[in-house]
Picture 1 (cartoon, rainbow, N blue to C red):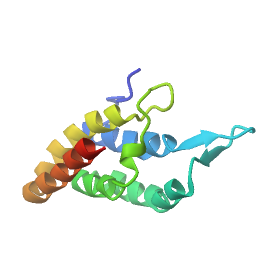
Picture 2 (picture 1 turned 30 degrees about the vertical axis):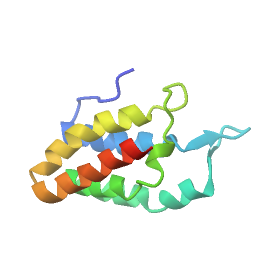
Picture 3 (picture 1 turned 90 degrees about the horizontal axis):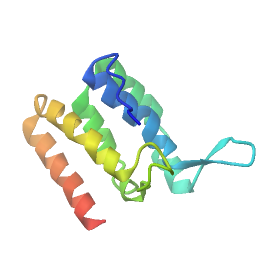
Picture 4 (picture 1 turned 60 degrees about the horizontal axis):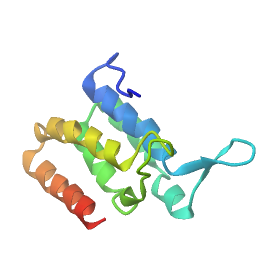
Length: 126
């Protein structure tokens, strides 16, 4: 399954992946196929996510995207590992994160490197 459309720019594609697929990884359909958060902590974490992501998409700001994703660091280890459970698995999260970090380096190299170290530590600690 291929999720980067390549219809827009790379930046738009990565932002769209995180904007749409990441929240879905923390939701499950109920009996009526209405998506419900798997736990209150996930609902709280994503409370202002869509508004933030809309702003990031409009500005095509990879540095802000990395900052936003890092703000979710407490729930990232809870991402599913199987693509049967969600389109955004832990592996895909990091695979899509790498080019975003590369694009963000242009905006602020030192801060981006520091944030990436936090992501690596998060992965090794989980």
